[in-house]
Image (cartoon, rainbow, N blue to C red; front, side, top):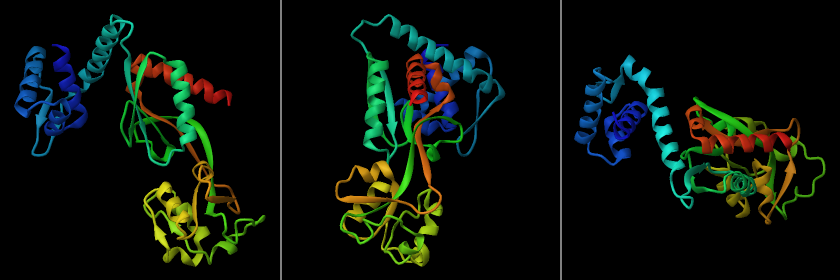
Length: 277
């Protein structure tokens, strides 16, 4: 077996779909089938069972999977060790939407200090070797390192009548026009603040960033994490009345990511730094 066969096996195992795996590997489906068949012949056992939609994995495939990932990782680490000094190890960091720029900047500063010889790539959304994201966006099989704790606040224009209120009450909010996030995971937590206007929003948004754009344009008030509001000079923020609402932002990663020594070192550095702050 060789690295090409192992990478093809890993991709099919994780995708459970030949078409998607072939697209990721930039192979034709017949070429991918042939690669998997060659690996099965080498091992003397079937690894996948074709179905109408996708494939099922055999028990032998489940045994092979962790070994295959470790072998590919070891090959990559060995190759990296013998590269020329000017070659940099690639690392992709996914950035979910609605992460404050200040948080991202601090993470990047720490990454540069811990891993000066890494070629870092930033990609938006649920992608990358690891992700900077809100804890609520953690996938079921991912681990999470908390880095920042954020309070939710009321966001409103600087000239709004409530902007200088010292003791805001929920009753003062109930007659206000609201910019809501009906598809956001925090929406249900905000409902007590909306009052009767919960059924008649002034506008809806798909993210906190877009909701704050609507607030700046005068559509109404919204609730958002404090760092996102504080970054906008045209907006004021007020603490929410009652029990404070919080969210945590940090690094989401899969357990197998730790097989990459670069990622393991970065996560250890970020964890140590977070523990000291």
